[in-house]
Length: 102
Image (tube, rainbow, N blue to C red; front, top):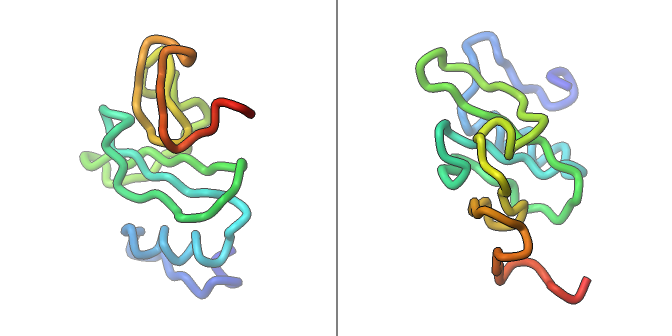
């Protein structure tokens, strides 16, 4: 991937590298969260894709971790994939970014 994009991670990565990855690999929507809140989004790719790559940025270790389960990582019962808001139950969440007729 690094050769394909020309990105150099020898000095670590900042959001600029995430943006470059998003531009090159558009089949996945990249979202970078900053712990502890799922609503604290540092970066969200502007692509239409059901495939997601969620990352958690740890500002203490200065490291990105892959999130396989956003609700589990953030210890929330439900996190909306469209707006990143948390709530107790999916069916009680009203989001203008998703269609309820689907």
